[in-house]
Length: 214
Image (cartoon, rainbow, N blue to C red; front, side, top):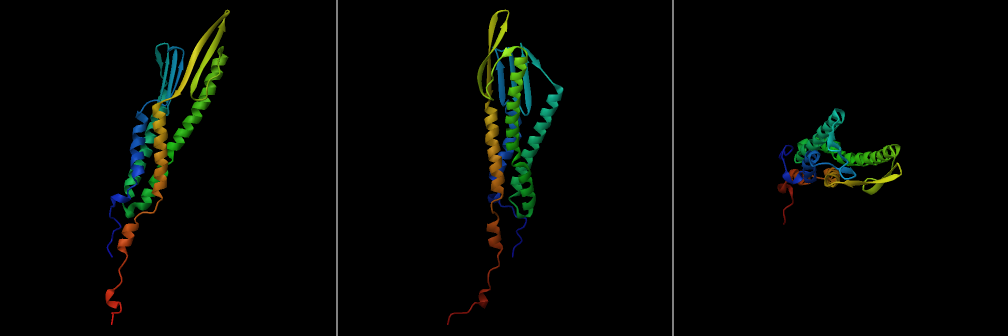
């Protein structure tokens, strides 16, 4: 019997995992996921798990703490993307099967959790923005995550209308697609593989012991 424990079979590679791994490494650099606009450029908010942009009246606001948190998230998601990629490659070898399963299992569901937590965060942020505006005398009922609204300010007998717009950007939908591919990579990882090598290693019967035809 031939020892094929360290043979690498490209056909057994986790292709969805390779694709998802590359996509996750690129994901932090695709842009903002969610945008909020107040008035005609009066104030703008661009958000993703990896970066935050706040602009008001021509000025950009910067928070070192938020920037540090964003950097930590970038490093984390790139790390999981690398784990998914490496684990998918190791699936080509029976010798590294346990390591492959472990790495893919660690990383496959992380993008889905990231998208889910982001959605929860922006919903909470939307309610927070609405509450803050009302506390400052701007009456507005904001949409949930996506949509348009108009805020009103009553001052000195004058009513001022402020348009508000919320939108999910293209980068968010990329993240959703990447998360789905990563989840599928985890499912694909559990499919039976190496059966071809195992069948090839099975010893054949000794033909000399078979009864000869009379």
